[in-house]
Image 1 (cartoon, rainbow, N blue to C red):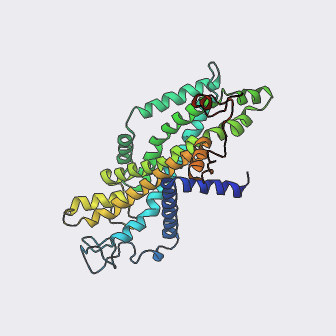
Image 2 (tube, rainbow, N blue to C red):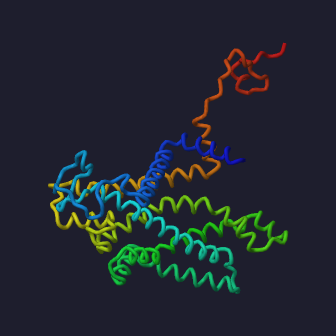
Image 3 (spheres, rainbow, N blue to C red):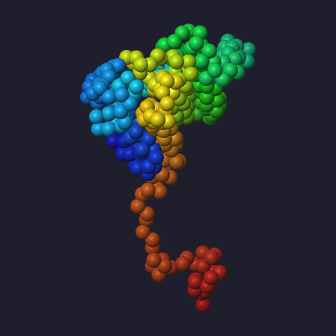
Length: 332
């Protein structure tokens, strides 16, 4: 199947599942906006970092789509300026966790043979993973962040140190399910090297659940990082690099939210929409990557076959239901 056919099939599946299409478009828009804000933010915002306007506590208007705060900061500009940071941090944490946890899970799953160096390595990896999983990831990340000090990179490092064990368990379970299949045994019997078997047969057949899980995990990481910024005040606000969780923490502490609800609506809606976009995309990727579900979706949206009229399709003599109903003429 060529690239054009693959893209056509992918688009057919997206059209067959409206929620997947919505998630795909939302993620594409978010990534596009983050790229524009990273390259030239003045294309989307009118106010610079910590640049105040003449109006304080201004309600949403054409000049200020999300209103202003107590010192005149434009909430829309601050929310948009935080988009590349929050999205980039979530992608970096998930990418590092997949790389570290995936490699460790691959070793712990494929080379888990008792009495060998691989078996000993597997035991060490699994016991270390159990130690990290024994603590709630959010509390452990909060403790590490507070011990390292306030700052965005301290919070990122804390989440990277606590997030990789989940991928160890996921990858190891998938490898254990794949490595005993007949085609792996046939490749080993044919003299194919272990490294080639891992790369060409094992890794390629465990990518589907990993891609689905990491896509949905981006939203989870974003929520956890915003929670750390909200509770531990990891990124002081106002600052030149705003962050959604820090914005919520700042406005929740110093302002009467009931009187000015638009102050928390902007960063809260940004977190909600980003998490929703990646959740819809990850849930839809499960249908896109599964061949059976993909075929069922395409068939459900395809044009139904024309039905043959009853008079144009005479019953077969060997049809038992037709014989019982008397539709088949009996031989003379």
